[in-house]
Image (cartoon, rainbow, N blue to C red; front, side, top):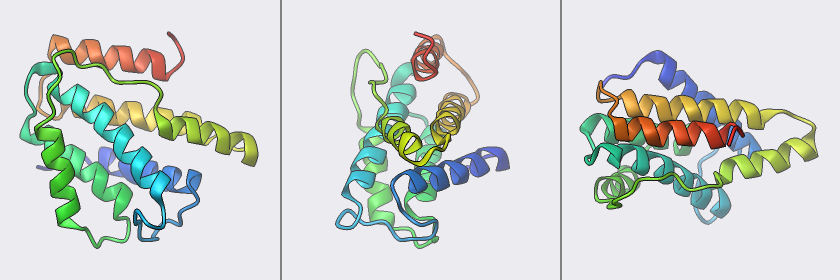
Amino acid sequence: MKFSEEIKNSLKELSLLVRQVYGIREKESVSFREHPAFVKEVIEDFTNISQNLAIADQMVSDSESELFKLAMEKIFYAHGKINQKFIQSIDHKLKTYANEEPRIKSPILMLERAKIFDQKSNTELESRIRALLVEYAEAMVMSDGIETVGEFDVLETFKTWVNGEG
């Protein structure tokens, strides 16, 4: 599946910012042993967002699965040496997720971590990470070319509370 350069660039920027928040260099290899909080929290957040948006129309499309895998590759394998077994295992988790009422859970752990990082470092990464997560969520919904009522509802709810409007 081909995705726009815009979404690829957004995912690359998101990877750089999230790595910065967790203290991981741009091209550094990520491992659970070395970066347990990063691995756990990023996987939890992305599966939370992706799974609930993907199943909002009662099925996970190939394009949704491919976008999720692309995001994981950009974030975990910035150096380009992708562990296909890891990608396949989280893709399997996405495809077999079952929930009758899709609803993205709060809080988004990456945003909570970014908030703390911003306070300590006097930066403003959290707002950009928020915007990039919303871009990702919108791309997830539109990756299969249509936005169903269920996807619209889950996406709008997510956008409202992630942007602090709720």
